[in-house]
Length: 567
Image (cartoon, helix red, strand yellow):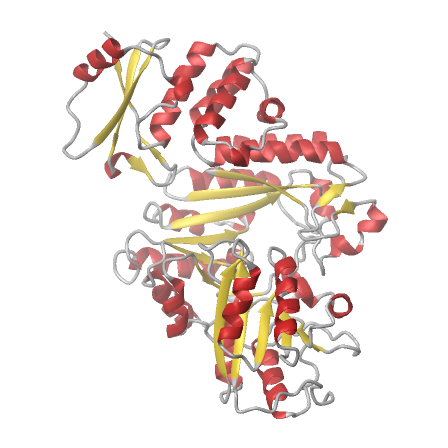
């Protein structure tokens, strides 16, 4: 046993406040509720309270919320997106209450406890690894004066760094009445397993031992509880959800069979899967899923095999591509794929090849991310020898490597923004198809050219109308593009993706008589339906859209267009 906790609080107060800053309000926390459940199971004399806020709210307000509960102990959950503000909260809490014990936990502090204590002397303890049992027993030690337990990943100032704690059994359910009261329609998170069978060098999940699964009866119960919580999205955070294929199929089949019964219509379940692990039974089952019930996130990372080998990622790239096309074919699943720029051995030119392959799959979203060298990841440990430079502050994003320059990565960041706004948003899909066909460029070449046109523009500070005008101007300057036809294609995109039915100024052509005649030529819209229309002069057609849910494709996020010849 360790020595008694140095800042023991001898008080009748048993309130333990667990705080967490989310990246956005729409995201609910899971970790603080897991810790609260741990206290209820392992330290029943204590009273856990969860206090959530966001990084977009003043940290002083978060601290005030915590102190309003008059805590005897405070625990804070630390992640890459909130660590900077969480550290500010620690200093403010100690300034207001110098004797208040503060405990940190989470991936952002689990693998660098010594550095955290040196940087933040206000911190009294750090939990390294899974926290339900260690945090509960630590809080009990703080409030009773009993020695701190050994071998539970509890780090104390001046003591050797402990091994990260990973238990063998299951973990207490976080889904209390308080959890559901606080959820308020936000994205709900569920883990049916912990750990990962793989050990990718940029990730931490494989460091937690083997995979542990919750009992299936508990999984099904919690899926139904979350489905009835008022949320629209339940996101399963299991790493490689289908690593155990029969178990994954049992869960998918349960949700399909209970859709419209124990699972309300309109709730969507999100899974992170290994695309190359899908088998014939999974394809057959997934094809039966009601439209919109499932979202699948499939990590590609790269298609360059030496890079995949360098990061210990064992992927059959050819099978992966074929499988993604198969799950896309029925049109009932929303598919999200991603690439990571800055990985070892991958040059700018090789990344372009990976991008073109990924784009050709025509998934609903293609995320272009950047390598983050997080604490505990193998790539961080080898970064110096590899000649990799990265930001010393969170999120530790790669700046350059031996294989790709800082300027090239900056270009890719602009490309990533274009992909998000033009492709992933669903607003400009027809425009991109037209540009690729007309310019005969590869997808990567096209996005690089478009990125050049957006260089120097803070796209986060301009309206959609301004962005549309900038795109139109940039695209019109590309070789082979006809400005009038580009306008017509962009009109179609606008009507299909914006239910106002109103064209932005850059696409409007003053022709009141023509529009009036076009409107008269169309069949009457359904009752209580708003309609948008435009004249496509180069196509000699009228395009229109009736904005009702019968015409809305929830997978594509677009309304169906209809056309008639222009008389």
